[in-house]
Length: 188
Image (cartoon, rainbow, N blue to C red; front, side, top):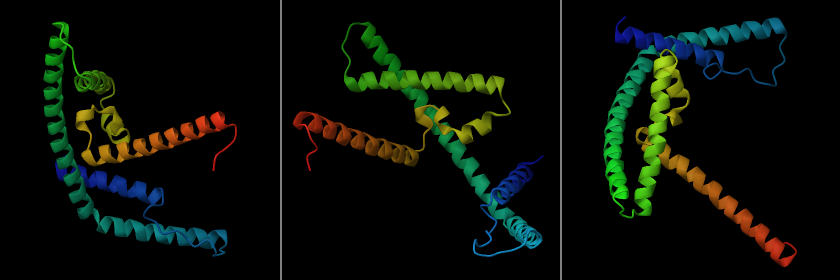
């Protein structure tokens, strides 16, 4: 099967999933009172209209899927290059550490990140060997399975902004608790 037919097949599956889960299908207003037969016929009519609209838009979905695949390949290539570069850098740091030199905190963090990435890479390779047909689904559903070098910069910034907000909330809560324990009551 050629690539365009596979992408069209994937687009049809995505369209069907959108229709089933209601992301494409317009909802019936909640204030409308319909008997079950009328509701079923209206639902079937909206679903068939959604299917027609979805299949008219298959070419756009195929182009989007092709763009997504191209971006994934580009990001994968860059991720592997960064992974190799980080591996070489961590080897140099490990050799210096074995020679008795002290390492900085930044170098320690590079070693720690590389150990995490090695573990993720090993688990990815084992899942690729034992579950090859589920491998793409695993990557799409949980991109955190990939080593850190494969992470999209936009996702990284969003994730770290959320972590920063959680840390600030935890610190503020801890300080409030310390003040409450120190002064015996809540300060306002």
